[in-house]
Length: 191
Image (cartoon, rainbow, N blue to C red):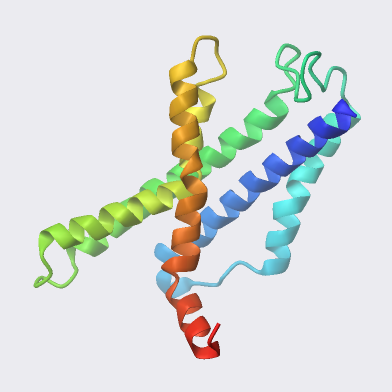
């Protein structure tokens, strides 16, 4: 049973990170390549979002010796199986962090050319909110999670938990509350 729980957790967490990567690529296409936008096709997104994690977990399970730790239902840290989770996550975080830096640069350029009548404080406030929201959407807050794999890192654990607990709230605010297309369609249908 513990083997099944560890494999399921491994798969579901990798699925979350795969979709974060897809969100980052989609944001990149929408923000950076504005005039060359071809949205990612949903079929390929689903294949990548669910298929790549399944491939990683499938390979890990197939060649497993010590896939599950002795005292808990998760990947074994001592035998190195934790890297079957940490390595793909680090690659995804690195790609999303790069996308974040590119988007912040492009947004800073865009906000500097905005309406000159708009006050600077308002521009800075819009830019800051947008940058923080994208940081959370891209999952870059998980960078802190990489640092709490060592002993005596209780402070990093608290910081990681506090910051990441806001990620879902930011995703809800951006995709539900501040989504102009969704707001317009719900007003038209009366829902």
